[in-house]
Image 1 (tube, rainbow, N blue to C red):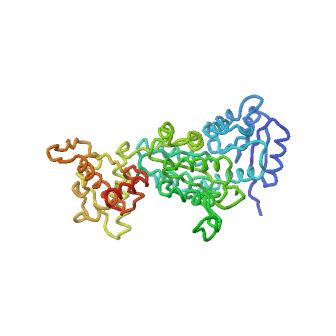
Image 2 (spheres, rainbow, N blue to C red):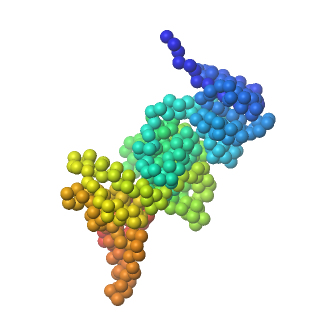
Length: 448
């Protein structure tokens, strides 16, 4: 019986002891290794052999590891590269990730960490054929969406932390899921968490877990979100809503790659890729003192911006068609037809709630329209968000400004609640509010 060929790893380091350590460790993993002492030898080997992984030191006699990363990105973009850096040289490691490196190791090399990294990198090739099609999930053929799909494909091949920016409802969680599903962690857990929806007093327990009896109500051991995501991806949505005290603890976990449950004496090593998102301007939050700068730099190694729907109006028609087909399939009814006047109205609308708002709008129209024909009137668009100027309110009809503004606020909150089926967290996101602010406003307006 023919054996499948062994996978090949290129090792680039000018220190014989390091090369030998890596060769022995990878040989025990049934991998074939090829070694180079410098950049020139590495480039020559890359021209002769097809490799499955490259491990390179940062400092080489005739160049740097970054030079090799860039060379591989240009000529062999499917080949994962891991950088080996001096201990504590975090800036170098981050630069390597930005240049396209898969991941990094620090000296002295931890062999357990090395084996995990190698196994993860080699799974990329195995997952590439079975990966979910990005085109089928991220709909739209506009230039902004083509750019997003290209970035997702590239970032899936890295372990770098990614900060996904974009307005509420634009599809940030879907983008995070696709980065996870296209990468080597696809078979492990994807754990999303809305940071603004967790009460501050429960955050440490939710993120890091707790031991039985560690506090009142802790009737059994409970793993935290980091333990649940071990080996996979943790998606921190609305990360800007984390209190400063929790930001300190999160930074330490990211730096140490270990967590300690509430009531536990020992730390547990974890292997988690961090993706995060927020609809807020995170850099502005840093400037305002609401978000730690050191944590910002650890999370924002690479930024991926998801464009709002109004910046890709050409995608509205295919998105609407997809949503209406999905609604028809789920209800067993004929597909509703979008009339020309309705399509024009959608293209003229600003969509403050983005794709999520479009979905909710079409679901309502699909239910209420006559004869499965959706006209502009069935969409119930808010005039103030149309391209045409809706005009200023009549001041003669306003007796008390505070009452008027409170009434407007109540209407908008009720609309958001209705469109999200009274999901308060989703309604808060629709209105660009934190969950705590939403809770306060509901109480103030007597809607709690």
